[in-house]
Length: 182
Image 1: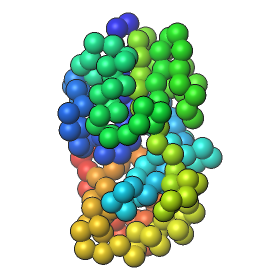
Image 2: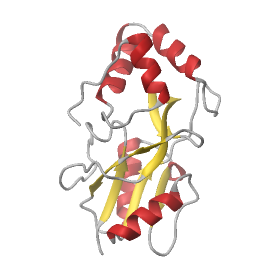
Image 3: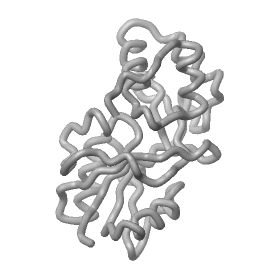
Image 4: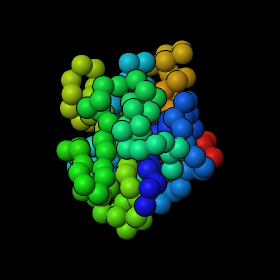
């Protein structure tokens, strides 16, 4: 019961950077409401936990860390975000982020000592809100050159099992179908 795991559904899967992942990503994580609903600083639209979105099965990987605090710090460093943007669960307590209860039930069934995940909020432009499907597809369709290439790469490399309404619309209108191995 000393295993700490990290949940993933986006770029963590194919670009861990210095995140100390120990082994392969597993495809049977908890079902969470995930959607392409956050405009990043480079204008990509990334996957985030999005209350009200249909639940999809996430991925998980063991972390080679000394404990939950080290896992939170490692994920925060990889994401380049503030401490409040990292969700976490342990048998004793949990963060107040969306999905924590579902994650806790899933972790108890697997006898994990802790779980961490990226808990960035939906955002479009400077507005912290869930963008509409048309806003997301329109935004992506207006990108050009390097920004468009990066946005398309993110969508295409997102794990194939992360099938969401917005992804279906992006595939249908922009033709950005999955190319990732997972």
